[in-house]
Picture 1 (cartoon, rainbow, N blue to C red):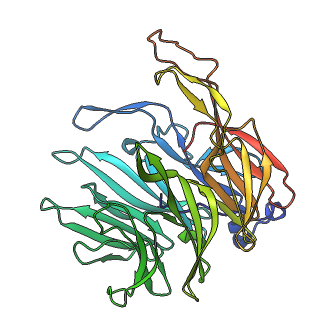
Picture 2 (picture 1 turned 90 degrees about the horizontal axis):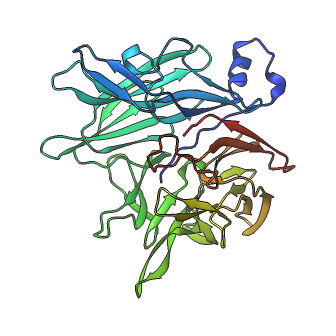
Picture 3 (picture 1 turned 90 degrees about the vertical axis):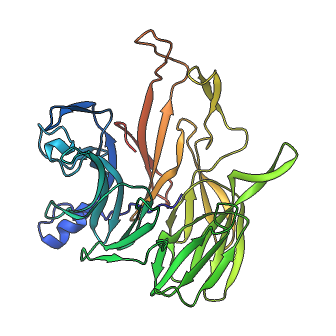
Amino acid sequence: MKRSMIIIILLACTLFSCSSENAAINDSIYQYIRVIGDSVTVTTESGGTINYGSPPILSRFNTLTGSVTPLCADPLCRHVKEDDCPFADVERIHVYNGMVYFLSRYHDTSTIPSAYRARVCSYDPINTKTAVLYEYELTGGGYRFGENLFFVTTRDQEDTEHTVSVDLVSGKVTKLPNNTEAPSFIYDNRYYYYDDSNTKGYPTAYYSTKEDGSDKQVHFTADCIAIVYTDIFDGRYFIWGEYGKKESNGKEVLNTDHVILHRYDLKKDEDKTINENFSDSYFAQYEGKLYYAKIVENPPLLGIDLNDNSKERYNASGGIIWEFDPESCEERIFLELPGYTLDRVGIECINGRIVIDYRNVDYNNPLDPDNDGWYDYPTEYGKIIFDPQSGEYTAYPLPEFH
């Protein structure tokens, strides 16, 4: 659950300026998202076929009008690698300093045997240009974006881990020593890590070192650290969460729905519990306050899922958006939107306005067009944009997206 937020927006009064500086401001009305494309079957150079069931396409959402536009301007493009579409098969999106960076994966049929590969790309919204910064074969391991850096770890046949960092601005690639873990965060020349070296298999500490691994400092510990919100670190305070506990079959186990929120003061080396009733959610921050949807008690029933043994489905958030002040530790209901099933992860602050995703599934009207016993449920995807000062909001239904 280590996530990087996709952020940016400025006032609509700048929309009609023609200078290059204001063009950058104009671009800030957009949020970059992955939209699910139509199924495509392509023929490879060797005469075989590849089926792309639902290729994700890099697109942008206009936060002022609600419109969604793919970045590829070719009307005949199928948005797949075989059409040389630079915006196809997007896996992750990261925005830094006005530039859009993304990771895409593809099936490379030009080699024998064929291989799955990934590439890190940049997109300049002002000049509408893309560039490939780094490309590698998928051989296990993982990756993460962190501010101006991209880290990727691969494994060779001897199961040795190889990690490199890619400077997103300069494109410089740096190899880290073998079996070196990629940091989750870098700040003021210190490298921050989750410590999951224990036998439990999950992180129990968060620490930092110098670049060479020396001067290790443990900042906070817990039975299980759920997440550190590094993208809102202000140079002093880390907001982080640990999983709570529950009883199961007479034993105390982790409750991954329940998160206890902390604020750690790096200057004073002090940790404070600020919210004992948080949940497995993300939040947006505006003027120091946090906005989020969380798991509520007694959530409303949405209906019965016939595809999953008639399991009951609930609106876990209750359609409620909360506001929380880390200074006073006061929490209050900010908006009640019972008609929307809110996403507890897809929420961002875009220059003074909050954007939160929703996905409404109508379980009361199952459809079986193929008469095969597998039901399709009418689903509305969309985003809600609200003003954290006035509470005014607008809902925009959208095509299927991630």
